[in-house]
Length: 393
Length: 194
Image (cartoon, rainbow over all chains, first blue to last red; front, side, top):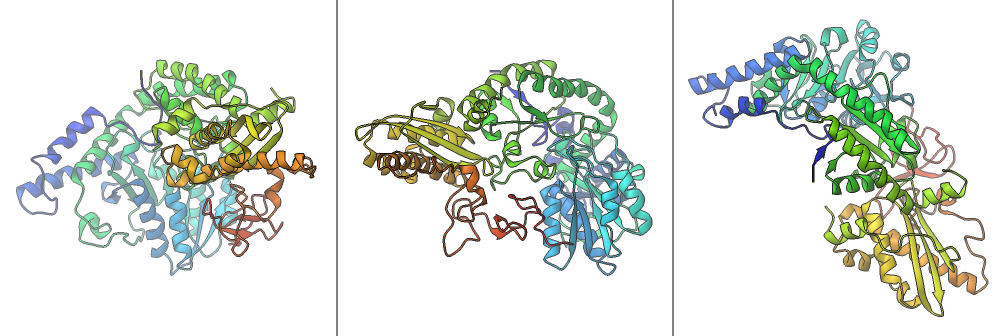
């Protein structure tokens, strides 16, 4: 059976070139970058080079890049480190309602320490209205965190517009760019953000290689206390192979970004147009215009996401869903609910996210396999029967 | 994640459908928690001559309903009533911990259908006749709004099936999930204003 991988938001394959760049650091080049000797220096050079490559991907200075073990850690570091670093000024944080759990739960942790937060709503396409962020600001606001793009619905957020009115007020702006970095052009100066999270495993780098950009001069408290690594802001011996892999993946992403985007966008658009045409009662979730190039997401009414994922998996197709049953916590996606979808519709969530390996044939196969899957599950669904009884079709 | 038996029942569910002139109907759950099951039964004397189900839900929910229908078909009413959630899960070769509440729903839906039949036979007003449906219980505070499991009298702040913590919505008084920004019944904001 041919296997079709459409779950980029979960993991991307490691590029051969990235694996090759990493290989020496899993072998003979095992030195600790903090060591004075030749073995240490070799490792340090590799880490420094990776820092340059990651910085270049987002238009930052190398000295402002801090390596972390995951996008989640970068988000924890940013939200907690920035908020705690400014708490003498105030203890109010503004976030969007559709942030990743690593941002929302970091805010929750801060609330237990006396911080107050405001969750700004999104529209039906999952877009934050910058005016809502501006309205939410108070004299006590020290941090705004709005993601660059959402991995569940693919919507790209107006981060630059938000940063434009926050920074003159002295309010720091963080953006979680994990879903966006490496896929769309990002520049920390154009965005005007003070901090930006990214993770290499979203653009063909290894798991364990991620980073936070923190603008020079911005006070941030360490999340991991330790030695002098990462300028004393993140202790712990550097994960050299993962950092090297992240660096190489960033370099390749910068080089091939347009190429990749031009290859993926038509496939994405075909999915977004064809799926609702071939199956009734399918909604596209997220913005049609402000959208990640690799991302096609839907809600299929009257059926549940996990059942669709299992059925697709039996046919060799990997996708993901934000349905309650898919999440271990059995919670419906806070993103879809924030966009105003009801629980039943949100249960039919399905995300197809394309990697560069995806070809036209993959999309054709999905378009062929998927309608009968939905049909079978609908024939089992009491909600579908109810719908037909009411005269629906 | 799922046993072979679960996957088999998911891929080839037995007894899917609706019996048109059913003697009893049972419906549990609601789409809010992700699972909703409808069972229809045909009774011949004291035996379940036919059992059919429809399920909106995950792989486990579909497999559970299929297994329950297979276990119940041909059994006496007493035997069918003795089918417990644990037995269903055991027959399926086990279920992941966080999917155990699906097995609760399966047996409950069957038992509801039997109860509906017995009520009709005894001439009692049935829930179906009274116009009650799973959707309409959502507003009641006696059952978990996510999975419809009855909440304990002494502690209504947590659902024992899905382990969700609740609070009362300040606007409509319904039970909604603690920490959620909006009440699931009326949509009123429940979070403390910032």
